[in-house]
Image (tube, rainbow, N blue to C red; front, side, top):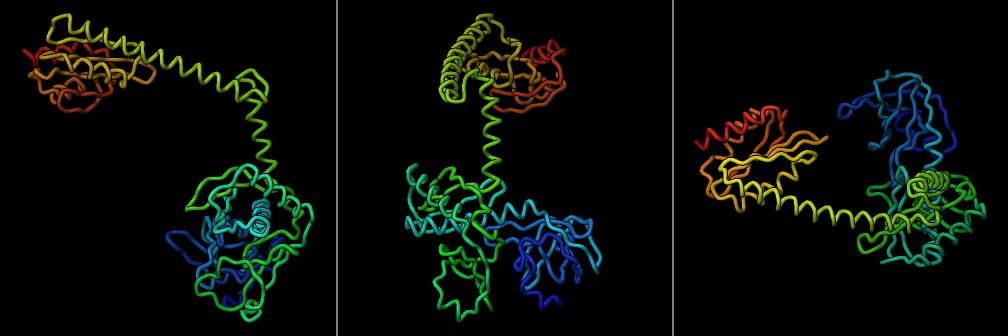
Length: 399
């Protein structure tokens, strides 16, 4: 089959086909990525909200598939020569996409026909999917009714099939569509859910709604005047439940309570934590006041203080408080914790020292680096062993 004749590919004729003998009829490179064009393909190119399939061409991994004009480009991890090759599909990923995409058609049809909510967009993500509905908001009751109605159709095991029709035939059919692609020519592909939906779509789908298994509506958010609805279907429901149970078991152990009481236990613990944080902030403020008053009370022009277990953010608070009432004084403040060693220079408004210039000297003396301007210079020290030498630099500058 020539490149120009390959209009209907095997991924459309049989979406359950996992391997195919093909001919690599052209190779090339786009933005540094090697690609191959085949005489046929079982890999779906990204389109219509459905991600591209991935797979292998012989032993070379196919990382992306895109339709470029009339061709389907298979982007490869490494170049491959033209000629015969074996094309294989990542079936687990594809089947998941088939289930999610069919579930979207079903969800869209039920939302529109039973509730009057039209779908304006669709996105198939790695962990969950979403559709946008032209309704301002959905209540919990709305979600339950929509989920139950969709599950009824899933359990009914309705036939899902695809076909192509001419533009003339298309014009006489009652088709649900958000419009054909710009510049579309030729036949139009339709996907039908028996008695429920007839939709324009080029994607891959399961043969029966029963293959979806289940669907779970997760949450909503306002979006562009409508509502974005997040959901999962098929194996993703079981995977999400397993993750939820595993996470719940860990939380039960941490809070030493039952699953039913987790929210209450977490709320109580957060309230306790907020109270502790309020007390810590009050204690920190008292410590800053006491330290600042003590440094100023010494009467020295050059003062210093070291705070064990504190960090640079704490030093900045003391520095600001000190500078407000320091007058002509200058202070070297240091701290050390598991985050590292820190220093800050803080000068009063009447201090004659160029803080930025002396700060560079202090940083070099402490084997660190920093920056600042005006009344402050702060940085991270390589070591505080030469702290006495840094104080001597300040004394010399003021002398």
